[in-house]
Image (tube, rainbow, N blue to C red; front, side, top):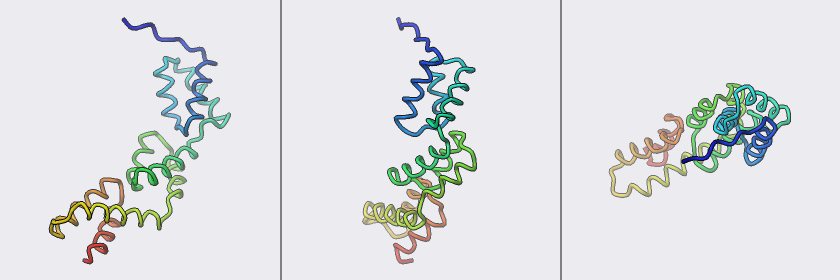
Length: 159
């Protein structure tokens, strides 16, 4: 038998949310979902989110910039996948555009090339046609634009 769910006062929930936001950048939707899981009332949740924004614990532009930087650098995600994930978190168009400025164009191209080289090493013995298809699908699947990927792969394979 499970124990009854703990009831949080608005103050306790706010403190818990502040710790949650201080640990790493969060978006409003993540905080809202976390507070719902804790059993906090809807009216209190919106008030807590408002308090977090006014005390700068919660900042969607800062979150979206950090998210884009992290997913690009640590996970090798392309802009399409990053943008899709931000949209799923209900991030505004403005914040998504600001996040886009966090990714340097040269580094973006270099990541495509690095991913292509890495995948090419795994495909020894395949025909160039098969290699090209598999490399392009792999990199496009990571969220990079197909035109950029095809151009980079063709340059790498000498086509």
